[in-house]
Length: 174
Image (cartoon, rainbow, N blue to C red):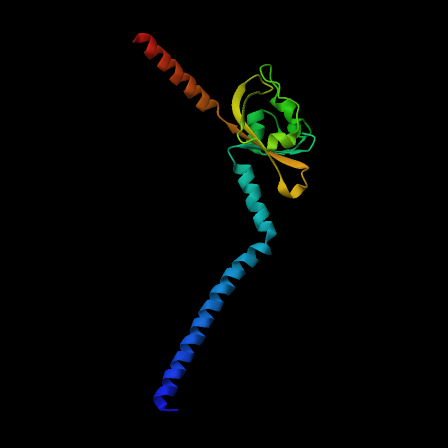
Protein backbone atom coordinates (compact mmCIF):
# COMPACT_ATOMS: atom_id res chain seq x y z
CA UNK A 1 0.00 0.00 0.00
CA UNK A 2 1.16 3.43 -0.77
CA UNK A 3 0.65 6.27 1.64
CA UNK A 4 -1.70 7.94 -0.89
CA UNK A 5 -3.93 4.88 -1.29
CA UNK A 6 -4.03 4.32 2.48
CA UNK A 7 -5.02 7.95 3.00
CA UNK A 8 -7.67 7.70 0.26
CA UNK A 9 -9.00 4.44 1.67
CA UNK A 10 -8.99 5.82 5.20
CA UNK A 11 -10.95 8.90 4.21
CA UNK A 12 -13.38 6.81 2.20
CA UNK A 13 -13.84 4.45 5.13
CA UNK A 14 -14.35 7.46 7.41
CA UNK A 15 -16.94 8.84 5.01
CA UNK A 16 -18.82 5.51 4.98
CA UNK A 17 -18.74 5.24 8.78
CA UNK A 18 -19.99 8.82 9.11
CA UNK A 19 -22.77 8.17 6.58
CA UNK A 20 -23.87 5.00 8.36
CA UNK A 21 -23.84 6.77 11.73
CA UNK A 22 -25.98 9.57 10.30
CA UNK A 23 -28.46 7.10 8.84
CA UNK A 24 -28.62 5.13 12.09
CA UNK A 25 -29.24 8.33 14.06
CA UNK A 26 -32.09 9.19 11.67
CA UNK A 27 -33.60 5.73 12.05
CA UNK A 28 -33.21 5.90 15.85
CA UNK A 29 -34.87 9.31 15.93
CA UNK A 30 -37.79 8.06 13.81
CA UNK A 31 -38.20 4.92 15.90
CA UNK A 32 -37.78 6.90 19.09
CA UNK A 33 -40.63 9.25 18.20
CA UNK A 34 -42.84 6.31 17.20
CA UNK A 35 -41.92 4.36 20.30
CA UNK A 36 -42.41 7.49 22.37
CA UNK A 37 -46.05 7.62 21.29
CA UNK A 38 -46.45 3.87 21.70
CA UNK A 39 -45.16 4.04 25.26
CA UNK A 40 -47.25 7.10 26.04
CA UNK A 41 -50.79 5.84 25.42
CA UNK A 42 -52.11 8.23 28.05
CA UNK A 43 -50.82 11.13 25.96
CA UNK A 44 -52.67 9.88 22.87
CA UNK A 45 -55.78 9.16 24.96
CA UNK A 46 -55.78 12.72 26.34
CA UNK A 47 -55.33 14.12 22.85
CA UNK A 48 -58.33 12.14 21.55
CA UNK A 49 -60.45 13.23 24.52
CA UNK A 50 -59.57 16.87 23.82
CA UNK A 51 -60.46 16.46 20.14
CA UNK A 52 -63.85 14.89 20.92
CA UNK A 53 -64.63 17.38 23.69
CA UNK A 54 -63.77 20.40 21.51
CA UNK A 55 -65.49 19.18 18.34
CA UNK A 56 -68.20 21.54 17.08
CA UNK A 57 -70.09 18.46 15.86
CA UNK A 58 -72.08 16.24 18.17
CA UNK A 59 -70.60 12.81 18.80
CA UNK A 60 -72.55 9.97 20.38
CA UNK A 61 -71.38 6.44 21.10
CA UNK A 62 -74.21 3.91 21.00
CA UNK A 63 -74.39 0.17 21.55
CA UNK A 64 -75.79 -2.37 19.09
CA UNK A 65 -79.28 -1.86 20.53
CA UNK A 66 -79.16 1.88 19.79
CA UNK A 67 -78.75 2.95 23.43
CA UNK A 68 -76.50 6.00 23.95
CA UNK A 69 -73.41 5.20 26.01
CA UNK A 70 -71.70 8.62 25.85
CA UNK A 71 -72.10 12.07 24.33
CA UNK A 72 -69.69 14.95 23.80
CA UNK A 73 -70.57 18.54 24.84
CA UNK A 74 -71.65 19.49 21.31
CA UNK A 75 -74.15 16.60 21.22
CA UNK A 76 -75.50 17.71 24.61
CA UNK A 77 -75.91 21.26 23.29
CA UNK A 78 -77.49 20.13 20.02
CA UNK A 79 -79.92 17.76 21.74
CA UNK A 80 -80.65 20.23 24.57
CA UNK A 81 -79.97 17.64 27.24
CA UNK A 82 -77.13 16.76 29.59
CA UNK A 83 -75.00 13.67 29.06
CA UNK A 84 -76.70 12.07 32.07
CA UNK A 85 -80.12 12.62 30.45
CA UNK A 86 -78.93 11.34 27.06
CA UNK A 87 -77.13 8.25 28.42
CA UNK A 88 -79.34 5.17 28.09
CA UNK A 89 -81.80 6.84 25.70
CA UNK A 90 -82.40 5.16 22.37
CA UNK A 91 -80.95 6.98 19.38
CA UNK A 92 -84.27 6.85 17.54
CA UNK A 93 -86.07 8.40 20.54
CA UNK A 94 -83.63 11.32 20.41
CA UNK A 95 -84.26 11.82 16.68
CA UNK A 96 -88.03 11.32 16.59
CA UNK A 97 -90.18 14.39 16.00
CA UNK A 98 -93.78 14.94 14.96
CA UNK A 99 -92.60 15.29 11.35
CA UNK A 100 -89.99 12.53 11.36
CA UNK A 101 -90.14 9.04 12.78
CA UNK A 102 -86.91 7.21 11.94
CA UNK A 103 -87.51 3.79 10.47
CA UNK A 104 -86.69 1.06 12.92
CA UNK A 105 -84.15 -0.92 10.97
CA UNK A 106 -80.71 -2.32 11.53
CA UNK A 107 -78.06 0.03 12.87
CA UNK A 108 -75.64 -1.88 10.69
CA UNK A 109 -77.63 -0.88 7.61
CA UNK A 110 -77.54 2.76 8.74
CA UNK A 111 -73.77 2.53 9.21
CA UNK A 112 -73.27 1.55 5.56
CA UNK A 113 -75.19 4.53 4.16
CA UNK A 114 -73.11 6.60 1.78
CA UNK A 115 -74.53 9.97 2.82
CA UNK A 116 -75.68 11.48 6.09
CA UNK A 117 -79.41 11.69 6.74
CA UNK A 118 -80.85 15.19 7.22
CA UNK A 119 -83.16 15.30 10.21
CA UNK A 120 -84.93 18.06 12.09
CA UNK A 121 -84.25 17.50 15.79
CA UNK A 122 -86.63 18.88 18.41
CA UNK A 123 -85.11 19.64 21.80
CA UNK A 124 -87.08 19.18 25.03
CA UNK A 125 -87.65 22.97 25.18
CA UNK A 126 -89.38 22.82 21.77
CA UNK A 127 -86.60 24.51 19.78
CA UNK A 128 -85.44 22.72 16.65
CA UNK A 129 -82.34 22.36 14.55
CA UNK A 130 -81.53 20.64 11.29
CA UNK A 131 -78.70 18.12 11.43
CA UNK A 132 -76.82 15.82 9.12
CA UNK A 133 -76.72 12.51 10.99
CA UNK A 134 -74.25 9.79 10.06
CA UNK A 135 -73.50 6.53 11.79
CA UNK A 136 -70.36 4.36 11.64
CA UNK A 137 -69.49 1.09 13.26
CA UNK A 138 -66.46 1.25 15.57
CA UNK A 139 -64.05 -1.26 14.05
CA UNK A 140 -62.32 -2.54 17.18
CA UNK A 141 -65.50 -3.17 19.13
CA UNK A 142 -66.63 -6.36 17.40
CA UNK A 143 -69.56 -4.63 15.73
CA UNK A 144 -71.16 -3.87 19.08
CA UNK A 145 -70.65 -0.10 19.23
CA UNK A 146 -71.28 2.72 16.80
CA UNK A 147 -70.39 6.39 16.60
CA UNK A 148 -73.07 8.87 15.55
CA UNK A 149 -72.01 12.24 14.16
CA UNK A 150 -74.42 15.18 14.32
CA UNK A 151 -73.55 18.19 12.16
CA UNK A 152 -75.74 21.28 12.67
CA UNK A 153 -76.92 22.51 9.25
CA UNK A 154 -79.63 24.86 10.56
CA UNK A 155 -77.92 28.04 9.31
CA UNK A 156 -77.17 26.48 5.92
CA UNK A 157 -80.83 25.44 5.51
CA UNK A 158 -81.98 28.95 6.52
CA UNK A 159 -79.70 30.51 3.88
CA UNK A 160 -80.95 28.03 1.25
CA UNK A 161 -84.55 28.97 2.06
CA UNK A 162 -83.73 32.70 1.77
CA UNK A 163 -82.04 32.12 -1.60
CA UNK A 164 -85.04 30.15 -2.89
CA UNK A 165 -87.39 32.93 -1.75
CA UNK A 166 -85.25 35.61 -3.40
CA UNK A 167 -85.08 33.56 -6.62
CA UNK A 168 -88.85 33.01 -6.63
CA UNK A 169 -89.49 36.72 -6.02
CA UNK A 170 -87.07 37.69 -8.81
CA UNK A 171 -88.75 35.25 -11.23
CA UNK A 172 -92.20 36.54 -10.26
CA UNK A 173 -91.10 40.17 -10.82
CA UNK A 174 -89.78 39.49 -14.32
